[in-house]
Image (tube, rainbow, N blue to C red):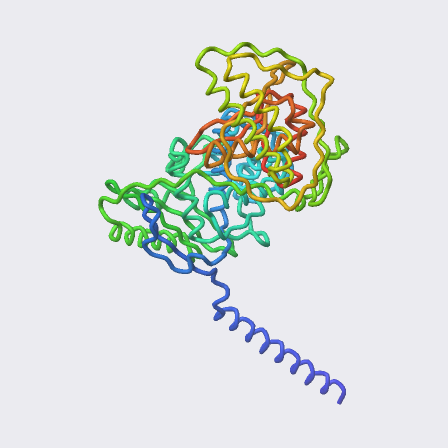
Length: 500
């Protein structure tokens, strides 16, 4: 009797488990959630006009399309002089530990930056992309911060990045529109490097690698890039570009179900673009990246100075004491006809310094009214052609003021720079690229005032490049450059050391 009951219970349990498993399998097979979300966009690369879109602003997993931004930053760093294609990179443990697709890098191994770029662009190697990011910024987290700041500067409005390679990470999301914007930027901002995306294979140092996008490049007439991506969460992604005649179309697809289906969809999207785009549209290149201004001093992060200095942030209502001591130095007699220029230079310097001080501390311009008589005397002497005396070294002016809430300051005229390149001062720092000379100069002045301990001996240098103005401090030692960047980065201010 007992054995019969046990047998019946056993059969009942087995049948129940079979029914549950069958239901689970059926649900999984029919559930649409297993497919990655679909999104697409088509753009006329010449004008930036959207010709077709579907779910283009949905925040989805970009997968290895992320590497386009990593490469954009690498190209930008090369143009800024932060590194070169021949820079030897020491592979970090973080990069060496990345999963496939990989180049096969080992921790501590040294490899040229050009080979890492090729591996990331062509093979879509995760270890190579991470090695690029770790070398440029020092860590995955710091490079992700640079990625996010760069993304905003070039018009990617709905993207957030957590790593250099695109492996699935919480919060690592982008949109079809943003990736299309990035693809267009690569073409116009770095045409000298763009051809790498059309290479079917390339030498990546450790091996000859094949392009993950070669099937599409071979199949679609005029195709010359740009980047594939795949993860389970993302599906099969692709940002593609093709040129026919004088028309270039860029399209992005997210959520493809296979390589073949994704490539077929990309061909369909590009066909839509070539049929819709006007034959003779004018080319409107994107403007220079516009980086966000540094946040107000009171909202900055606590300084990670590792004991090298206090560097406290300036808060509203805080009393600031500035001791402005000057050395004695005779001025040469001005040449005839230079009176007007000298007076204008003095006015420009006065306005620039006052504006930068006001922006750095939030002080109103009226605080600096005490300086005006001295400036007027200098202008009078300049007009008469006489040299302007300077105070004795022991003389000092003390200014005391209370910093109110920060207020916006308009662009200022060019101000006089100062430099010191003695004692092996061949290093510098870069504070970003800005849309005008005045904005770059104001950023330099504000930064010098907030970091005078490390930058007081530097040369403020503005370099016009790529349609924008790079704000640099040169004439520093390596120690000064590294310390200044650590202190500024701790305040969420962009800073990159520039080596000799």
